[in-house]
Image (cartoon, rainbow over all chains, first blue to last red; front, side, top):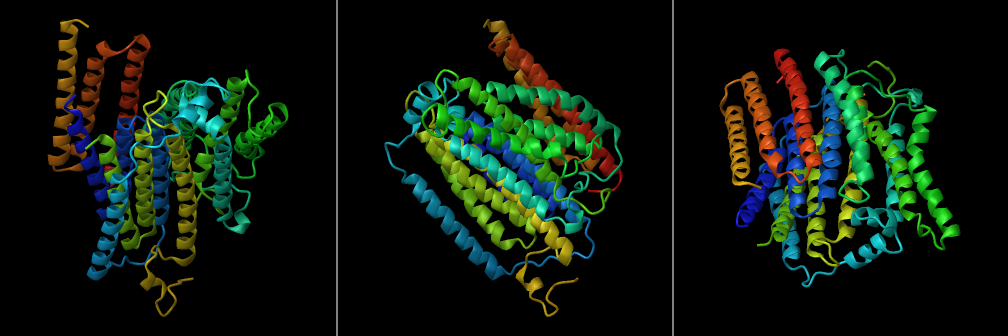
Length: 317
Length: 112
Length: 95
């Protein structure tokens, strides 16, 4: 077991090195690619911290979907003519900022070295939620998300919907109701079409599997939903489908389905099981899986809409 | 040095790096990237708190990890709104920069 | 796990790691983007295949072994398509 400390040190220095590259790269595209690689290395660090669920989420959402968002944004920005020239900051500003950054990092590092020992933990409450009154789920993180802190998870789904509304509101007034601009401007290209046609069905299966197995093993609704969202985005990027109109009823119903079902179940729990968001004992696990199914639908429709952006005036722009 | 302390110090260094990039880069998308770096550094600190809270038969404390999962998705939603605002601002004003000197030029920096 | 299987596993993973190393050296040392792309895709597809092959005897059950092979097939598919896309972009003169 003596190789693990070396692995940890190598991983930490790689992570900081790639982050440094992301900050100091000259080109925007290089910086974004560096950020995606950084996200994948960070997933390794999460595995070393015994957090496979977080590693899955970081790789799928933190590095994958955010990377698509930033590359699409960079391309749309780069297509603008008359962009103002870049200004380089002066040396004194660089030195001052460096001192500030070092102070902040040092303060945070000192706080980490002075963390209380023995460490406090909420694991017993989470275990109680997982096995007893809550659910019978074997994955404690799903139990925490859906039973111990279920209200937070529902609010987070509502935050996603608010974000979609915010992105849509930024579009021009006369474009309201139209479809966002396509994710790629060029004509369909055969390798991309092949990738979409072969990868999408497999990806949908794997996404559903990761959601379903998240009740007892690492996985869950967010990771599965992010995979389904990625498959839809691949199909849109291969120009096999276009972004839907934002006033489409099916789109809006799909996005609202997750938090709506969650809220209704929580209110029903207040009537049937005694307190708001409590589950009736005995059918807790099927109810949780049903809520998670609608959550997966919500996430899989909200994430690509966030990447596609506001409705565009010229639909084939 | 245990893995959690090393990961925590890495998180602190990432927060410092992200702050440096956030202040210095005039390009708005680079600022957004640096902001995401700060966010992931903070999540790493959550992660080591979760690892140190091993109790009740688990090797980790699930509550901070659930918070980090929620946080990653919310950070992506915030990035999406930021991107939409940046694109709209750049299209309206033809300036692809958040540098104060460009926006306070005599003609107001506004090219419309 | 018998000694022969153990030896095979270690040997396959080592050769796979060497292919990854060779691909990285090619990425850093080749003069042109197209040649770097060639080094990356050829070496890494084979490297991942050998690593997956070496991990097969160590899998817990048949399902895990099948998952390893599916992972390799998916990486092959996405790597090949991405290489085609990058190649087309390079031929059109973008960086």
